[in-house]
Image (tube, rainbow, N blue to C red; front, side, top):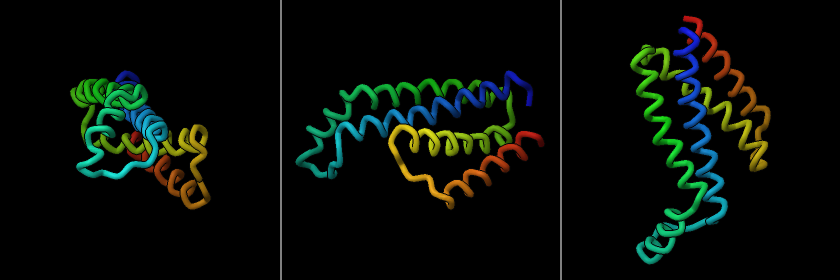
Length: 123
C-alpha cells in the first residue's frame, strides 16, 4: 500500500473512531434513557440538538466520503481490516477521556489487533 493510499485509509478510520467518541460524549451529556413511545420525542429532540452528537454524525458523513475515495485506490481485502485500528484508537481515547477500564485482557486483545493490522498492511 502506497503512502497516499494508507493515509486515506487511516484518515477514514480515524474519522470513524472520532465519530464514536463524539457520540459517546454526547450521550454522556444526555444521560441514560429508555426507549419508549412516551419519551421518543423529548429524547430524540435532545439527541438531535446535542453538539457532540451532531459532530459525530458529521464525522461519519465525511468518513464515508473518504472511505469511498480510499476504496477506489485500495483493495477492500486490505482496506477493511484496517478499520481495526479504530478499536485501538477508541480504547485508548475512551480510557483517557472517559476513564473507561482497559485491563490486561483488553490490552492483550488490542495487541493482537495491532499485530493483525501490521500483517495485513505488509501483505
